[in-house]
Image 1 (cartoon, rainbow, N blue to C red):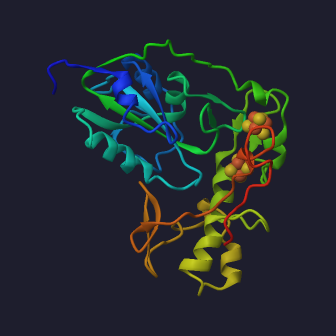
Image 2: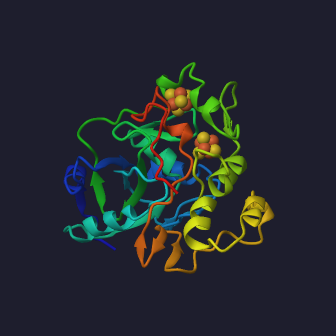
Length: 277
Ligand code: SF4
Ligand code: SF4
């Protein structure tokens, strides 16, 4: 443990190149709010667990890192953040797993959109979020943080993501807004849409092409499968902290982004260029 040193937020922010990162600050109390905001699941848990519990040891002030990242399933940036901090003179920091959406809002780096995601002020939907805790006290940013707890104004009266979702998972016409995560997750994993890729399509083409198409066609839902798709042959492996690896190196696996690419809120003008599978 440290002897109660102080670290300037501006010195931490300066470590992260501005074209790739946005950096925000969370007080201890704000981290507590994040920890008390439930999350649905923990597929990419990394760091000290500040989720879905009542008592948390070592609640501390922290930073929120938003990394520009165009690939949906690529968590290599956790290590990139670690490497930057390890190469600095900072001590007594540790990665934190918490409700990253709430952390981004409370640190003033983004706003809640009606597709259920966070829209980063700097990178839109093309980003990943991390939180890093510090035992040392962080001297807060000189400018007060502008926190917007409302839905993003651009979403007012916009039906585009709801209409574009191939499985009708987005319910944002009338409050309470909600996302059918089961439908979404099954489509991302096992969708057979002619235009929108899925993890199953990638898996069949590259990892298990010997599985007959009629068997693959029947694979539709996580609930119906005894196990997830296996990435365990032909040099492929699965690391839940990173994504799919080929010969130890991350490979992008394209899947649905229809709710993040509509003309009103993205640079893709509604026509996202999925990698061919
Ligand atoms: S399409 Fe974009 S702007 Fe429209 S409601 Fe959905 S997230 Fe908001
Ligand atoms: S990722 Fe695809 S399936 Fe999931 S909510 Fe968005 S549009 Fe719908």
